[in-house]
Length: 114
Length: 113
Image 1 (cartoon, chains in turn orange, cyan):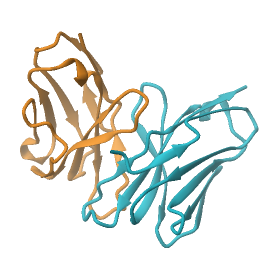
Image 2 (cartoon, each protein chain N blue to C red):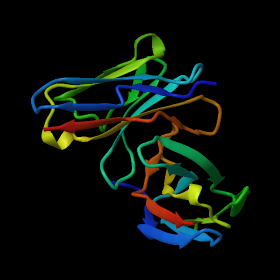
Image 3 (tube, chains in turn green, cyan):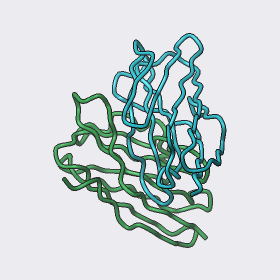
């Protein structure tokens, strides 16, 4: 079974540039999560989707971050414009409703904003 | 803010030794989970313990939960070099109806051959 796929794995951009991350969850998983992980910290939830609906986006900085999950499968997280403080690893995870909330994580996208 | 706090922040042991790390949390939980993260990789689920359970085993892993103290411990027995990773506890609070997990800052474990 294929795991959660994320791309790109690494991204280096200059501040004020836009950037987008893509995630393909495990087939059949209806819940998708985007996390941000700063160096030396645990992941912090940015947004959570149930199918195509964003059910928890309270931690998403909406002035510059946006996300979408078209057709309830793949998802894209965008930052525009990026700031220096956005440098982090962006993790995507998915889970299947009805199973005890085990989340399956992708390898993450490591973003460096210069 | 993060719900869980792991202790110690870092742990260095030799192969064959046991590694113990602790997690404390602040509010009532439905369950507590432990994840492992190898350098440059995503998190991997290790074990889940429910709020009405006190101890759980999985292979070389042993997890305990003390809800009165709001704390959990993860024990890795007979450690191997491949156990080198960061370990995170994550809690699902009772106030959350949809599987939201709150992660601690993690314990970085180094196992030397």
